[in-house]
Amino acid sequence: MATQHQRSLARLMVAPSVILLFAWMIVPLAMTLWFSFQRYNLLDPTQTGFAGFINYTYFLGDPGFWTALWNTLLLVGGVLAVTVAGGIALALLIDQPIWGQGVVRILVIAPFLVMPTVSALVWKNMLMNPTNGLFAYAAQSLGFQPIDFLAEIPLLSIIIIVAWQWLPFATLILLTSLQSLDSEQMEAAEMDGASAWSRFRFLILPHLNRAITVVILIETIFLLNVFAEILVTTNGGPGYESTNLTYLVYSLALLQFDVGGASAGGIVAVILANIVALFLMRGIGKALD
Amino acid sequence: MGSITLQGVRKVFGDVEVIPGADLQIENGEFVVFVGPSGCGKSTLLRLIAGLEDVTSGRVLIDGRDVTQAPPARRGLAMVFQSYALYPHMTVRKNISFPLRMAGMDAAEQARRVDHAAGILNLTPYLDRRPGQLSGGQRQRVAIGRAIVREPSAFLFDEPLSNLDAALRVNMRVEISELHNKLKTTMVYVTHDQVEAMTMADKIVVLRAGRVEQVGSPLDLYRSPANRFVAGFIGSPNMNFIEGEAAARMGAHAIGVRPEHWNLSTTDGAFAGRVGVAEHLGSDTFLHVDLDGGTHVIARAAGEIPVDHGDRIWLTPQDGRIYRFGADGLAA
Image (cartoon, rainbow over all chains, first blue to last red; front, top):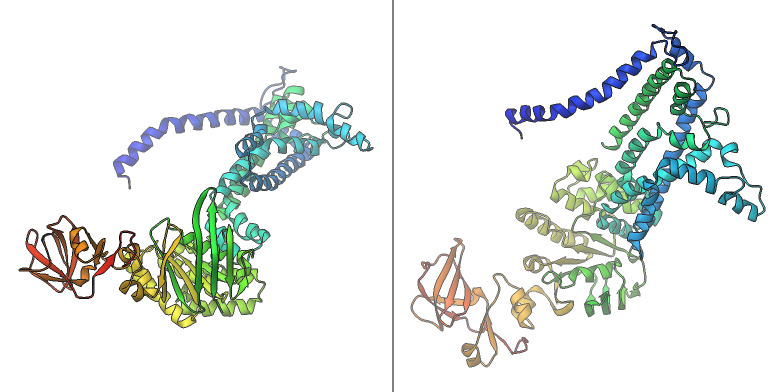
């Protein structure tokens, strides 16, 4: 164990980075908080001064707010469900000894390396486009009416796109966890008469518990802020059907030039993110027990 | 019931022949120990019996039934692994009842069997703990408990004591032997420790490079080893081998004398030498002697004898305790 002297030295050495990180977080947060209580519209510089809670009531009363909130949760939940389930399946598959294992693994990781804007464009124009897209072509060649994905099922389409991007991440984390599973345990279970499903249910899944928690935690942080995919594909539409909170804040600030209202939206998003984080942390506390 | 028969069992990994062909008969209720140096294929042989490895050619029979192609669960065997292979997220109770649960046994019968096994193994106070909260010896007992509840036709042990400290190893050795006396079920036990083999086995199978060198009771192997390898492997400290003129005089390529079969004298005898290291244990004295011919031998004397480093000593093999080996290593 470290001595008193070592510990205070350690604190001293860590202090600069802690202070920097703290300032990095607190300054923008304080500014946003400040703006959220100000009348501040870029189109009308005459409006200034303290606004009270007007910006908040305005944001929470926005016709898109509840839809955006619901869409945010659907988007996060949907992508999590797809990536965790798909990630486990893929990890189990590529954990098998097969020819060309290295190449397969690199191919699986590839989507994660593509920029969100680029992959969203590829999905929009090459796959989901109702006239030129591959899906439309496939549907037509089978005699079906092609679906206009981004117009008819915009949120689901965005969930598909984002899930495609995050699947490699989940797969990678789950694969490393899978590889740390003691092979003698699996053999013992085999001798104990456990079927493949039972081995998965009673050994692999509990073993993956921690890795799944990590995947959920990290993905949630990023998925609350999905933006590029929406901007590139649907612009939040039709109506508010694919608008999430991040996009709503963006449309307030940059499409309607209402900095005060957007700041209030930002603060609301921060509060919501913290509520989600609270639930996640509780979940993790249990999983890491 | 639990007789196991191996007929010409061969195992090849890639282009390495690990088991060139083993024939073996294990009778019901026997305690059989596979012993040999590391890498001799003893664990592989056990895993072939368990069904965790596929047999390349040959047949495995359990109670006369050909199980060569049967999956591990269908063979009616239970195995205790070197790492214990307990399920870390399950309590001791759930670990032990896991095979019963997989067999779809009803809960009351499961609980009855688990309690019975826990009673035998002194695990009752620990049933609600997780493996991580147990000591090495307790984990070992849980692993054995998980094997017992299935009431298998035979138990397979894969170096189960190698992760325990010396004192605990001796205790568990006795416990496993007592368990065998109590259950009277066939046990196949793999170890590299010849002391474990000698103390526990009804029948020892000595393996070298995948070949069965000799099969017999511990004292059979001690008294009449078939070749120089078995002679050197069984017995502690190892048998002393003397080659050259002294051996030729007795009509052999090499002669072997166990450390405990020397008569020691400070005045005269068959071989003269100088004491290198003298280990005085009180009950025994082990002398490392450099014979004048250049051979290094170990001699054991009962009790205390007053010799020390550098002293001259004469060693004489006891009558009828000299083993003769030909140039091919076989006992003559």
